Image (cartoon, rainbow, N blue to C red; front, side):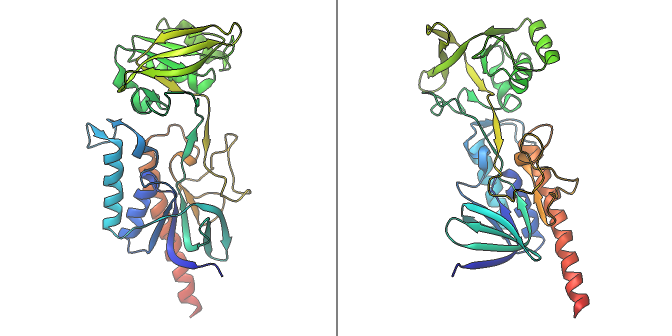
Length: 317
């Protein structure tokens, strides 16, 4: 028989939003368990430098992740290294079934599973992640002032973020595998009118090259001629897709057209008692500051649910 663990609040995913929610729930004297399959901190733990989190003018992502983790654990948050395979409801309980066979049951659940960018899967991408390879212009654009930057992709996100990067870079090249953009026409017009933007058509990135510490150039291949060329850049921003991590959640949980969870202003999903925070839910921008704000709201809302269930139980006595 599978081992069952009961608690007040289950947090699925240990990114900044989940850790913040765990801190608040634990601080409210609730038995709170965070289930994380990799390492606490999520994407921020593998981010190089962070300069846009209030109170820290400059900090390494791994260090910030550790501070989040230690702070939450100080108030009693329990972190278990578990991969959640399925989430479902069982009466008042919200249940997480894990790959280990263990089943965690809580009266409230906060989903902080984040999302995953679509990777180029080329040589150098992993090696230079955080050292010139990025998936977030708002996070990392300011590190490349007066540098030459490349953006890979041709959709709305790629073209809009390329325009944003021109605030910092001396030149931004959009690399697209087709001979025309997929972005909306109004977004395309702004891009074509921007003199700091250049376009490399019909091309894909074959490899990301560097000097051992940072990105120095890209090897490109023209998909029509098969010719290769080199593009000198200090950074490459990849925007070929982003997918929220929701495969373990119920199919009937409401999502938007991009697959992101739809929540109300309590961060509650379409399933009562299950809340969401951070990159997994629909929102305008995806930043660590958003995630911790979401986590705060989700935790407070979850606490209200626990109090309501306790009041109902008391009335039945």
